[in-house]
Length: 132
Image (cartoon, rainbow, N blue to C red; front, side, top):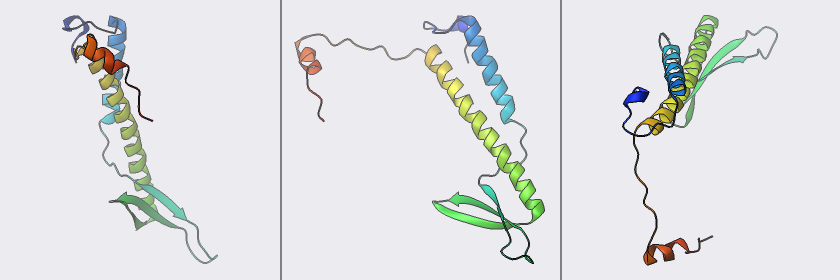
């Protein structure tokens, strides 16, 4: 990201707002790092159907529009739940990181200059009714 004073176009942010955006970006960047296992899906606890049966665990996820189910041991269920929670935290941080990046880039990088509609040919184009 460019520092606020070195922007080639007019900045929409004050220096303090720009620094706050950069700090938010760094915080989110740190939140995304250091996760050992990331898994998508859900761990389900399947209750026993009879008093003699045991509780079972399954991990489900979508792969190419199909639901895949895998049976898990109790230890695997705990590990998979942690990995799924870490993945959700990363996805949330990544989403916020994208929002901060988009806001900063749109504000700091010069965009396209818009033309005004003038002249007889463009005046007629302004009054064209919209189709329903």
